[in-house]
Image (tube, rainbow, N blue to C red):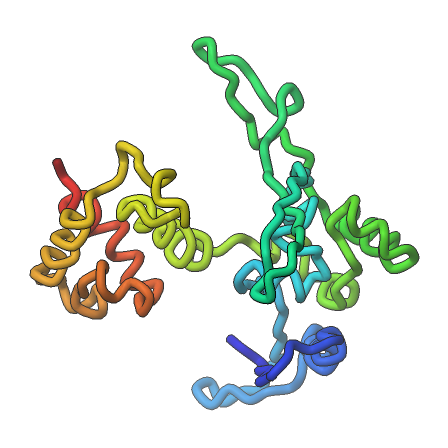
Length: 263
């Protein structure tokens, strides 16, 4: 239930200041306010608690003072550490610039085990974030901003600091819509259509389709008569994927992909 909008043109410099009135109201509702039930014709004590916060990764990072998904420590659930790599590129003005990208490779032996001769990663063994170490890391970064590089935590959200019902990171789970449907499925389509990378030779792999096959898949998709409760009728994904919403990408992954790509 969205409780506010920041119309822009820029994001708020101090998002916490916008949250405080909301937090104050929740603190009042924690103890309850008198209300009237018209059905039973009785008064009762109305209480409300915040227990779940959702959004895309940049939004959740802003809300909980995290360094973000490109940082050295990007994950809000565990302490996965990225390996930096410096990329050089030319700007529009022809100036040479560099940008540091992190790659997140689970490193053995900390979370690995052998199975049939292969090294497997046990994600359950990754060091997890807790409400306690989140507060400790956030407090250290408030005192010294350089600490955020080593922890991925830049501060403490008032939602965690002032509300007993918000437990980081449990109250901010990863959502399927952004990670799978709007993220993974689009990447999957780029791999299938051999357009994932800008360098054309790098897109030649056994899992890809020819341009003609991908175009035909889109045409075949428009002929699908799907149930009305699945939402919008199937559109040509080859032509309209940029306009696809999460529901359409979900239908493509769950219902259409296998029959359309069979053999």
